Amino acid sequence: MKLNVPENIKTLIPYPPGKPLEELEREYGITDSIKLASNENALGPSPKATAAIANALKNLHRYPDGSCYYLAEKLAEKIGVNAQEIVFGNGSNEIIELLIAAFLEPDFEVITSHPTFLVYQKMVQARGGINRVVPLKDMHHDLDGILKQINEKTRLIFLDNPNNPTGTVFTKDEFESFLDKVPESVIVVLDEAYVDFVDREIRLDARNYLKSDKPVVALRTFSKAYGLAGLRIGYGLMSATISDYINRVRQPFNVNQLAQVAALAALEDEEHYQKTFDLTKQGIAWLSKEVSAIGCKAFATQTNFFLIDVGMDCKKLYEAMLGKGVIIRPMSAYGYPNYIRITVGLPEENKRFIKALSQSLEELK
Image (tube, rainbow, N blue to C red; front, side, top):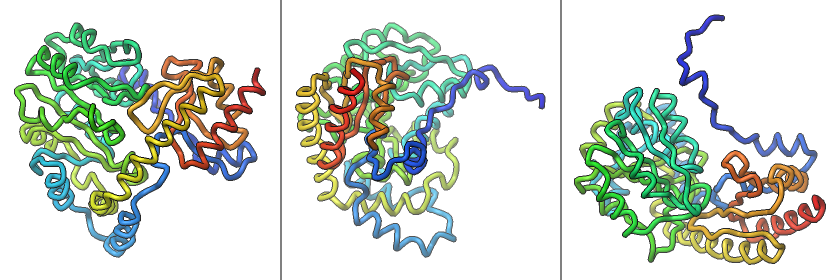
């Protein structure tokens, strides 16, 4: 077979998917494992969302609403924006791809940080763009360093706030000082996948910048705080001008029917949302204390996950803990060979993690 494959595709490394939980259990001969590797909602979806899905099953022969009309109206009312300023996607990942498709030409540039969410750079490369990557500074976005990379070819800047994998945030003042220096032709994308877990008093409100002269886009998701990761639904907040261009490259019916009805119902379940927030904050506090007591370093976070410096090869620790039925994320691929990342679980899962961590560290000494 002789395929003419562009060089940017030949050298593109696919996003590394994890194995299904059932397959890991079969390989390692374990049962009743717990997964704390993917930053999922330990509580699962809202009961209102699952009920809405069940009720919608009878309509699966119909195409979904291509405009997400009812969801857009409900969300716009809830968060105080215009429905025209919202674009829904198959996860917020799709909004990343649509922004790049709409505004990036081959050989033009996008600025990101490292480490950060891997999808930004992969999508840029897939479209023939050029990645300019700025290392984090003290585990935070180096906003001054990013400013120095801007040139006439820069089209987009992606800033995940909070950052994945470090869980760190920048302040309103830091962002506004940064934004003042960004040219009006460059779109600044605030990826707020974990914004629901940020302490209210320090939470940056991206809605304040949607109508500014500088183009700002916020990305949000129903995967984390709302527990709908399996349905793949997220959205972008942006000016009506930007959303118009995004809708020109967006596929029709890109958000499936079940995702739409589940998200609509989840927005109405404030009790479940608050329970998720409280569980996460309590879990972070307890886990951080217990991790430190074991002799590891837990890093502060504004998300539902946090980094831990385990002081040894994280891949070996991952394997050891997997044998005990506890799935974590080794961070060697992000440039942190001695770090792991874990998601807050239910209280009993958190206790099991601490026990498995302590035992595994002792065994590997």
